Image 1 (cartoon, rainbow, N blue to C red):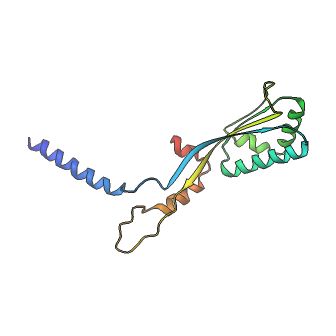
Image 2: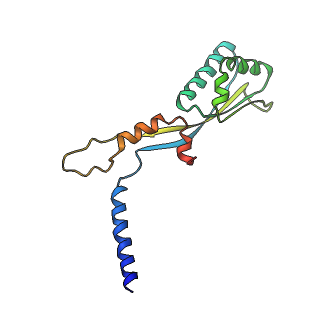
Image 3: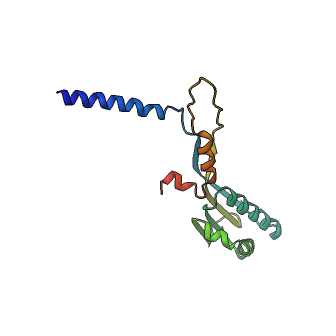
Length: 158
């Protein structure tokens, strides 16, 4: 009976101590997947190519391990897609998934489906004298998460 009582008291004391370290209101950073679908009708090949390049560059800055699905309806769309991907050989290697295929059931000439992981950070409050700081390591943790190259691995735990 004494050992049971000592075990219960020890468990209560240890859980009280552990609670002190996780007393924040929530996470300072949130990583979540975003899926965007872009549809293009090719009127000007140069203008469509510029838009595709702008989208590829923007998404590559956010997450280098994004998933890309590029679908085209006709040979005109195929030429524009391959022309815009001509100088982006590293993009295909870095991406988690990169698929270019023909889909004759599209309503537009090109459809681009991109899934990437975005990082939203919380504004860290500065410490104050004689106040309990609930986000003790906020600055260092947010800075560390911003430097992670594959943000989805934080979520998946790989």
